[in-house]
Length: 302
Image 1 (spheres, rainbow, N blue to C red):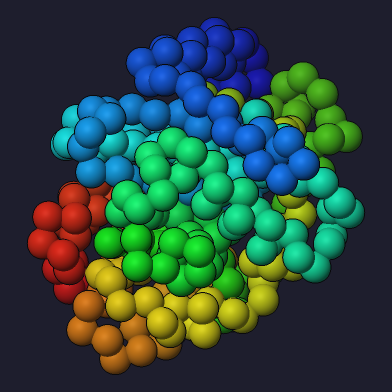
Image 2 (image 1 turned 60 degrees about the vertical axis):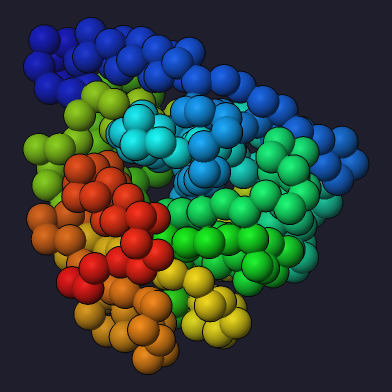
């Protein structure tokens, strides 16, 4: 692809990186320390004394999975905390083997310990997780943060164990360089993350490429395991299950009802014209649904 055309053009990629630096500079950076000195990087936007909202990214992600949502949520009066989870982005890797069976438990414990250092032991907070981060959010809310999470939102969540609409074979971008590597990232975004290829802009490319390169935590096997329904059973707060209509990681029309479990405080919403990375592809609709839930204690049914 020529430098003058398309989202892979060098000038667009440079501008996207500049925009990300500006977004980060508008917030504050914090580092917490956990197991064996493991450092977690957190970023914060919004009034520090406002209701706390924690946003968790997906597998092969980083805080930037929420880049199109952070400022809108902070402007709506939320104190927004966005970590790079252990083994992702700028945060340290958990000690021990990368496939250790207790790695998920220790990841959640690191987040709990870190947030307590930032906002205190007893402070309530709202929690939203995307993809693998949805499974993490559920385990956190129903585990060490039980009783402190007021509202829980799971976006394109992993851990449901349901059927996928199609098999996805992603391109191995590590074997490529230059324009071919950027094109591979664009193709992978179209295969997995975004429904409308026209929405694959330079920002999406930079976010996806940088986060994929920095990922060290092995989440795939955990994400595919059917454990979410059992994890959510004890949760009694407001719960929003949000999927894009064309999410290739599951069939929300089938999975959603099994997670609702007949509970009136739980709502399923399927956004049209969106794929897996729903908060990037449909940011305004995502903000509206989240803020409605925060304001009312429930969420409007779809």
